[in-house]
Amino acid sequence: AVGDVHGCLDELEDILQAADYDATTTTLVLAGDLVNKGPKSAEVVAWCRRSGVAAVRGNHDEKCLRLRAALDEDAAAPLDDEYAYVRDLSDEDVAWLADLPYTLALPG
Image 1 (cartoon, one colour):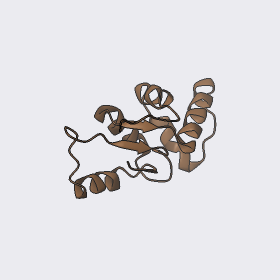
Image 2 (image 1 turned 120 degrees about the vertical axis):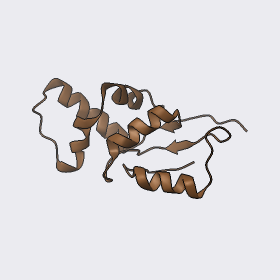
Image 3 (image 1 turned 90 degrees about the vertical axis):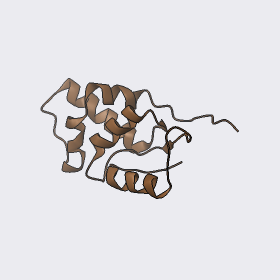
Image 4 (image 1 turned 90 degrees about the horizontal axis):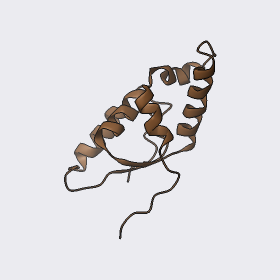
């Protein structure tokens, strides 16, 4: 499990490479807070969605969804610079984030 990716896609990929992660033999679980703080929040969500990783929703992911809902109501709604990535999320990425559970039951 990896927690608090916070938009740091390059670092996530570095960690997975250092751990010899193999998606065909290992289930990757991300423990929330996929977005915010780092430079690639939208890219992290897209990568997670394409990769089919298991994840739970963290408080930063929750805030992202609230901000996106506000933008859907009013496209001119102001966003602080640290949340500018919310505008870059695709509808598919938003739907994927919204479907994340708050908890997961893992085998074993």
